Length: 267
Image (cartoon, rainbow, N blue to C red; front, side, top):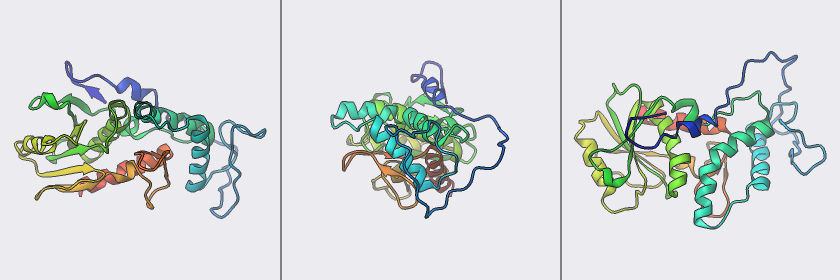
């Protein structure tokens, strides 16, 4: 992701820390596939037989998630304090990448969506409404004329910058949609003001990307709920306490969720 000169802070460097694209390695033999109905003891850190890098078998998605949840819950307890929770969610992409490498092995692609798909997006401020603190994510291909407003589920400022917005950048690039992200979508009038700006661009399509929101007439509503709460369509676990927004999932699962949201935007 790139930032236009003189505009918002560059967080491409933070995303680059999460990059992990493994070099091709020819294994001596394919890892035995794990059966969905088999028993898989959790590879927990406190056990004597804990294996760094996971075990010598490929795991079904549900078992990969179990390994990841075990590590995250033991290593990073979810705080109850709002400010500490903001910091926890901001660090979540880095921690999930690290946990996946440690628990599932370095032979898999543990790249989070912002790094995998969003590095070439141009991130800039919204000059028409600078007081909102909104961020505009412009994909490399804007020929489709798609525009959208994205509304986070109530994250704090650190989580918006380092967790939510890299996901939005990835969605923008994959879907060819210029997306305006609001840092505080609960403020009265902000969403309407952004949609007015979008309307002046004469977009081919307009959408709102949100977890729970209503869209006005002529604006499509694209659900992003799977990014912040467990869904039966994906292998993910809720974070912490009831009502806390966020999920634990493998980087691969995060990439799938982002690709599916981008597909809905293109449709």
